[in-house]
Length: 194
Image (cartoon, rainbow, N blue to C red; front, side):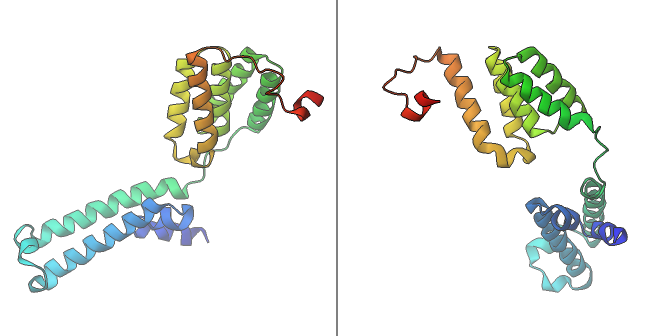
């Protein structure tokens, strides 16, 4: 089974498409197919190509382009097939402890735990989102916005887009000034009962 996975590297983009389901993999696979067909036609049937394409390239240049694209595709396919490095088992425990510290209002302890967590697993979306919230709560609004903008550009944060956007609005609201206190008329009855 492992050999079959590595065989997907032979066609650039196929590993990303097959293993990870990335649209970029589909685009790379289509591009490689077009380049390969162009090189084959340019070499074996140049009369089948329009004059504009024939005059601008030689068969050797077309094959060099195909070879270069193939090497780059194999190089990039490694990231889709090589399993991520082992993560220390206490990472999840650090996140749970950071959440507990955050909920208790211990911002420094929460941020310390999140810093340890993100040092081991920098791509952790939930950890970065909680870090941005801690930064907002401690009044470091510029750092919170920077963390959120980096997070929103991450490919793995797509499913957290609503939460990231909501936190960005909270940071902006904090930057504008303190919110007015909620009056009892604005408080729903269930919130008063609790």
